[in-house]
Amino acid sequence: MAASDRAATAARLLPAADRATVAAMIDHTLLVPEATADEVHQLCRDATSFAVKAVCVSPSLLPLGSGWLPAGILTAAVVGFPSGAHHAATKAAEASLARANGADEVDMVINLGLAKAGAWGGVRAEIEAVRAAAPHPAVLKVIIESGLLTDDEIVAACHAAVAAGADFVKTSTGFHATAGGATVEAVRLMRATVGPDVGVKASGGIRSAEKALAMIEAGANRIGTSSTAAILADL
Image (tube, rainbow, N blue to C red; front, side, top):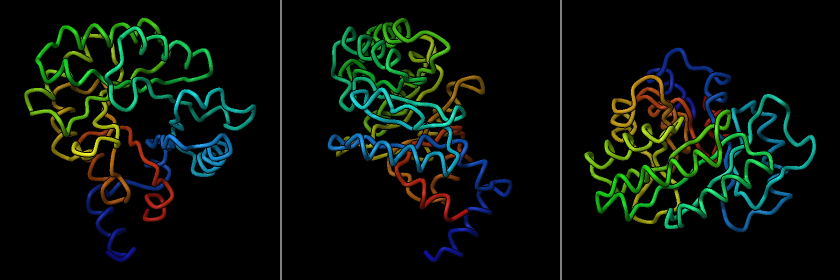
């Protein structure tokens, strides 16, 4: 699709959208395991130029260097990433260390085995453990890997996250080969489930303004992407 066509589609999806509005919803992300400190520094330079909401990195790459980000851009770190198959105590310790190293936000992956088994009490308990390790004002986002769940399981996962004190539910890690990434259908269901007072973050496979705006129209108020430049270039 030509750039002019993408821009026209973006305008149709969300007529009030502009570059700054969308940028302020983006978590500019670098989560590949081979990422270096120099690459994270460049991520922060780009994030500053784009005026995004946050950068999202692996916890081992914290703390960020002094002055890498201006005061208005937040730092997010992932926990239990990408499989979610970590012990709850490990996730809690990871969250606590991330906070100590400067993370404003924590994006944790739920235990998908518990979710698929219908053990929602266990899912809620591990989210509560991470919430206790990273209390407010830290922002807690709960990654449910929506592509692996049925609609009923998406609803149950969202209920568990909200009951445990999460600030956001999040679609995907973007690292699961069979799960795929964010879909409009999943985002719409997640928003309908959590209501207006809990955030919905769409993440995984969002590489164009058209797709980002479709997620926003479906109810997402945060976008996780490593394709920020391409998205903003279309607006």
